[in-house]
Amino acid sequence: MSLGREYRKLWAGSAASNFGDGISFVAIPLLATTLTSDPLLIAGLSLVYSAARFAVVLPVGALVDRLDRKTILWAANLGRGLLLACLALFVATGTASLPALYVVFALVGMLETAADNSALSILPSIVESGALDRANSQISATQLVADEFVGPPLGGLMFAAAIALPIGITGGAYAAAALFFFTLAGSFRPERSTRHRPSLPREVVEGASWLARHRLLRILSVVTGLSSIAYMMPFSILVLFSQDVLGLEPAGYGILLSVSALGGLAGTAIAGPLRRRTGYAATAAGSLALGSVTLFATSSTTSPWVAGVCLAAYILHAVVYGVCVASIRQRLVPEGFRGRVNSVSKLFGLAGLAIGAGLGGVLVDTSSLQIPFLAGGTVFALCALIAWPALRSWEQAGPA
Image (cartoon, rainbow, N blue to C red):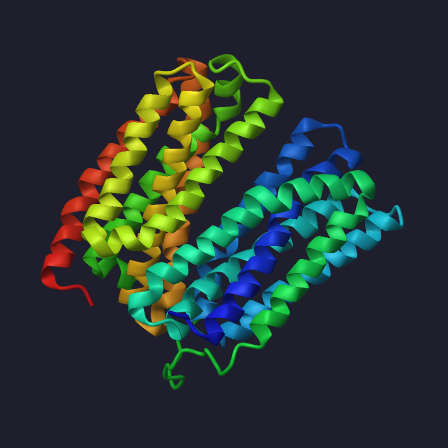
């Protein structure tokens, strides 16, 4: 059954923006290498991008609950398109500089945060509650294909042809996304009283307080933060593990990542049917348990083939869990709080990723390459034990 015309517009816009993300994932670091050979300055791009997203995630959530979400969505993508178009012009005219690249990348990160939150907040307004699993799965599948399989190789090929080409194409993809989002019918401004509107910081606190009072979503936010730590600990040193333990060359490492992404595609296909058959509790908690098992198994093998299968199952679990949590949050959070609850939940995830990356490096420095996998597996097992009773109790009470 069709999810409707407005959903197709939202999906098309998401596909276009994710295509741009996939190209820029390769093109921006490659562009940095033409401006500097300092590895710290090149690595600093990712740090600036993450820091920019972290800095604006909470106020963006409040704005998403104040303004028309469709306007934020198309304007944020148009802004990204204009920034990349300007950067392409700088590159083409030989006036690009590393400071300019840093500024553009930081601004793109801020706008991406606004666009992602708006898209998540709009989806429940155009798709029926019972179809959220399917819609989230389709959007996740498209994101994986664009980010992992289509965008990066195209970005590399275009960069080899002309340095400015992938930058310009990325800007065009964001502009196309903005056009799709602009055509969404109707207004998506939350219905809220404006007589005594509090300040932006107070609205952020209101959203956080609402989340803190909701037992299930509070627990899932904590689990999301913990699972982000568990996710990033092994992945932050995966390239070293692939070289020193699995004996892979750079090309083999690329294949390993592609195989793991195939597991994510499988996850998008089974998430909805599995949830309908077994319920949210068994699906979400079971996926966390699968993440634990796969990390333990990866830590104990030296076979690239076994590691590839384990990592594919690992990414499968992450996708299934993500689809379940997104659908639960979209079903339970009132319209006027969606942006702020999404932003607080995202904050837990971003913090977890940063902590996990740091812990992964520390654990390798003090022990062996297997330890981050064992530590991550242990944390995932803990997450499954925390999530299961909360989700089971909610389901038995009759979820909304």
